[in-house]
Length: 456
Image (tube, one colour):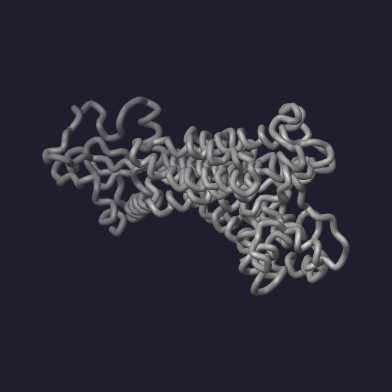
């Protein structure tokens, strides 16, 4: 509910202004699909159809490569925007990103709960990252990042589930296969998830799991070859703009991505420091899934960065998703610490009960009994039992009976108090310690009858 309110208000405020950056170009491509039934937005720019949502001149994001018009952007997001745009215009496309952002929050919370984190911690971490991470910035914008975040975090949930339903596996696999359609830099995810899906699966189950992913990934290559005569997962970026992998040294790119004052993750979203720490400290299986998904993409993204386009690091969708998974791990560590603290308090309470003055109180007079008070303590200091000087140790004649009721960690503090009150009442009534001869004539009371004794 918090996410719906916060993101909904942000969308409403954004709708009052014009689209920014690449937003109008995603809308132009969606408009070309629904109005001209083509993936070439040239006519939208030529006829100024975009003036309904961007009333100003705009440069066409289309390049001509080998006589073919190649849009700068992949068609995955415009395909999702197309039908809502046809029905409600720009507001319909904004609705898609809003729904994606809300579903990210839902999946983030569910991921933490499935990892065993308490409701309070999961809610706190989810709210913190909803308000203090890149998701808050891009939930109200028409970029591909919320779509990538949603797909990756759902796939991570499926991977961390011990025995997920088949439909969930197939849905996650198909969604990961669709990621390269959304943006070319997401082409690494079918490779990494194909490897991660192999964990704990036999080869038949593995082939079924990766089949939708493989079909969609290969389908993108076929589509790009037929439409643009290119085998690149992002013809607009590689063929039209000249971008590609490892154009920048990965170590420099990672430092830039992390610490740049304008676009770096840590200066803009310092809360992510806890997320990165959590990703390193969780259990082995969770650590493998989180780092196995995050590290390859971070290296690919860092190799693509350059000062003119460094903002791509900040609105990276899938990295934002994994940061939320890492946040769940960090919250789990905090939850475990809280539980260990509670266990230590319980142990200290038990130790305190053991050292109460009345923790071992006789339930009936008899040989081997220890009266409460200084008399019993004096005999303990002397190393003898009270009332047994010069006499052999007596044993109970019945099986399972004893002369003592030891009240310690196995007995509640309330029972110890009840027995102590009973003993004090008997002494106040004038019934002092019985003689050994009188004790032998009595039946020894079992040690387990604490309630009966306390009620006397």
